[in-house]
Image 1 (cartoon, one colour):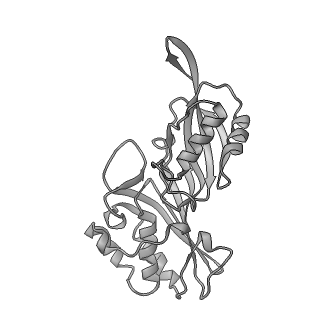
Image 2: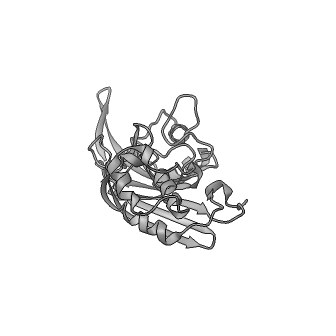
Length: 264
């Protein structure tokens, strides 16, 4: 807890960490926007109703884009309430829409910051690689009906691991989800890229210390072009050096992307 003061009255505030899961399809991303449904807007509405006073979050681990999902988004907020974490979880879930759920609630150190304290994040992108679409998975995968060369995709992905300027893999001038207190810049460290095949499902996982706007979707779109033979793995170094979006591939659709984990 930390000491706060309102109108000369002292009180103790608690820093509360939430882990959320949500289906991003109905929302215009995480961050609050005027006149549009967002995850942050829905969460702060639930917090305000549960605590019976206006509430805002302090921070989130990152801002997922329109249509992007999350399995373990991390958020923290402050409150003077002494309500039990289990009761907070139950109460928030009662007020949240069905596309969002609070998976866990815990009181954390007053200094904890869900964005700045994160060491890395893992995003997962799913591709349904079959001649026909999957009606059951369609809302969460990108359907690619063409044959893909998986060894070539993996070879190209390895060339993106490490600390690089990822300007060629970001859309526009916006930055998103950078970790640490340093602002600006497009240099990120990609710690790992893995591609698993489970039947007709390809699962791309990218772990990095931060992500630029559309970075994962642009990486996946470029790797799929390698898989189709439109590019060679050796081109990845040239694309990175170019530092221009026009050198990389198409942007994969948002519906295939999920924030899997935030690592502290």
